[in-house]
Amino acid sequence: MFSKDFLWGGATAANQIEGAYLEDGKGLSTADILPGKIRFKYLFEPQKMMEEKFSYYPSHKAIDHYHHYKEDIALMAEMGFTCYRLSISWPRIFPTGIEELPNEAGLKFYDDLFDECIKHGIQPLVTLSHFEMPLYLTEEFNGWIDKKCISLFEKYAKTVFERYKNKVKYWLTFNEVNSVTKLPFHSGGTIVPKGENVDQYGYQILHNQAVASSLAVKACHEIIPDAQIGCMVQYSPVYSYSCHPEDVWNSMLLERNRETFALELFVKGEYPYYANRLFKDLDIQLKTTEDELQILKENPVDFISFSYYMSLAWARDDFIGEITQGNQMSGIKNPYLKSTEWGWQIDPKGLRIALNKLYDTYRKPLFVVENGIGVKEELEECSVEDDYRIDYLKQHLLQIDEAMKDGVPVMGYTMWSPMDIVSNSTGEMSKRYGLIYVDVDNDGKGTFKRYRKKSFYWYKQVIESKGDVLK
Ligand code: BG6
Image 1 (tube, rainbow, N blue to C red):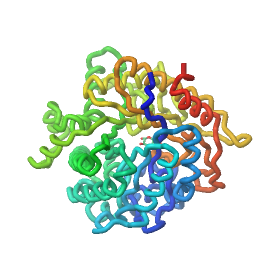
Image 2 (image 1 turned 180 degrees about the vertical axis):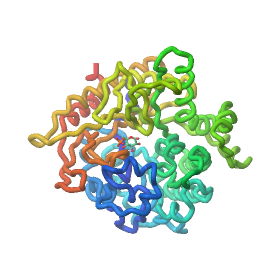
Image 3 (image 1 turned 60 degrees about the vertical axis):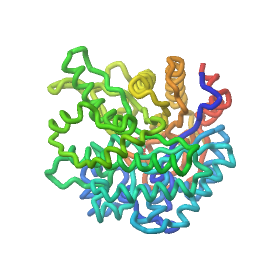
Image 4 (image 1 turned 135 degrees about the vertical axis):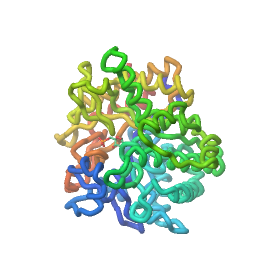
């Protein structure tokens, strides 16, 4: 069922892979002040992060892709990738975000990177903003809560569309855009003052980013008529812990209010029918204009992309049970599922459910742009016997195949991630997702050498056979 046009590959993000954080004129990004292993708690206390100095910042070196990109793309090509999802670092192009003219050296880096992909027959799929923005915009305007960011982002988007119009035909606007209602700093560069309503900030930022995204969609269609541009959400179908109606209702609310709400704006171009009630319950007064609402309405995305790592389970308010960690959101431990070392529950069938649910509601082509497993691993005889990763990816790909047989159009699959890179939520290198082992530790020490894991050879066969070896 995997068609000959199905895009096969892997995904990364600039601040987790590139390093070279101040090289060739790049400005500081909001991701450059995130510490390593202790990061998670600081994501909820960004003010402290702005004030404190840490001994190590993982994004500063990451895995030094900035200087290894040729070798890295060649490894992806060796696996037969037809697509590579990466993000552009906004502060490499506009170091503070407010410059009139872009930074030529930054533009040149991505020119070279895209040329390298194209040389190997790999289509770049480019995210405009993957959990970062110029730090200056946080310092001056408190990030995306200020509507000035809309036009600054539009300028950045138009600059890269013009520059790469002959090289990049697949674009995404904001990574896991729905995460901003929970994490206004991480996904929106905004610090919520102590005692203020986080939801007020979160949903206002989501609105501002939705307007900016729609303007980017408009510009992309005008500048690159043969390109497709999508939105990107974090999606974990939320199961009801039991058939108790209160459990069912609360699970539905969690999925709707924190996950698919964003899709209503990006796909249908309007606020959902339940928005007024939600805003009343959360005490939110949204600032919108007629013009903004029209921009949303007139510029829906071409496709929906999403990350899928797990499903979630949820229940009534007074439910007492074990809570498990997850990607941006935690849930109740599902007794039927195994978990990773970080508590992320492994549920391949949930991906088929996710694809069917999203297509049922939105009728847009879907793209699975993140899926993978983070594991602590040691190099043994220059490789890693990662059979668990092979099994994880295989089971998820088989469910994509089933969903396509159900009738869901799936454009492609970019697993997370082709190589070990810095973990977004914990800042660790030891949470390894790669098909390629990279010799760097949690303190940025190591040889930075790349080694093919067992899954590297397996994925190569999967792509070569267009999925046939999965069966
Ligand atoms: C997604 C992000 O949330 O999950 C990626 O888009 C991230 O940036 C990936 O790396 C895996 O999460 P983590 O926290 O284990 O790196």
